[in-house]
Image (cartoon, rainbow, N blue to C red):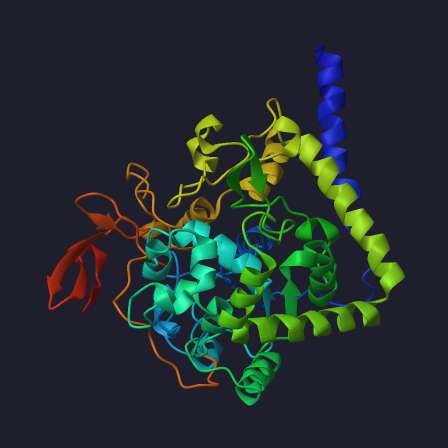
Length: 456
């Protein structure tokens, strides 16, 4: 490549990131800067969180960040788990989105009154398939089963509600919204939960319709098009028919057809009946929102969104924009941490990008853990983690070790992930060591002194 053609390429990239990124006119609305996202599990929520991280970083907004990597999940959220929180209205936070078990009164102590609350749902059958793949080693109900089909045939054979991390195996969405996931299903209970969520959240997105969701979110927040253009993060590698493929949670919502029979899929819907009710109800509401937006208008904006994603993927990414194995990513700063029994894929940037373009592309592919650390270091420079520290060891996605037994909330009330096996010792995402002892079959887990937390 000559110097002249190189300059033309760089000029083209700068034009690409400055010309078409606004998208269709949003009228006279004002961009929202107070946003709370309930990051549900296995729903493409890491991709959504990246969108919030990017926007907040570019606008220099203040994040409500956890002391570790999530807000003491699976315990109900408590305001004092926010780093820098000193009491209601003492300091203003703009964006909150890390994993938590929702607890609206406590969130309200942190976020301003005009905060826009939203979340995302996924078909419970597809969610269970993903949860099984990620958490088989830490959720006792999954660990005991020979396969997902075996679990689906008779969940009660493997499920004990008293065992820690089994919340991943039943009504996980209901649990994340702060509700009692072990409650016996009834129509009245399911409807009460639905109403409580509708009151708390302005918008519920649907993973299976991710691009339409991003269009609705963009207009609800009054953000430019590029703010909601994304590449799928936390995609996992999947082996099938002797070849390797990858599963994009935002697009490939259904598990492989051969994995479950129709009867087993129906059994999983019945097992996750509370989640299934939520998914059906909010899927209807979602398409009501699309109808109000306009189907033809939605189709046009989805095409623009996808076209923009393809252009940015060509400009930013190697391998034609497809995710690659972490071992092939030379820059460890964008190499995703590996989780449990599945391989988490990431991206490599195109070589030769000018600094401004590289930074814009890097924001779109930076893994969640590294992005949180970056924002944390900028927001709390004196407490920034030391660069020489080794990254946390491989554990299931999202996971801090937790106490045995599910945390409880009253039915209808709106309010870690499982630790992995790491040989002789276990660590949380922030690197603090967790020790284990047994007493009458009840596990006691405690952080070392550097971790500042004991769980008994």
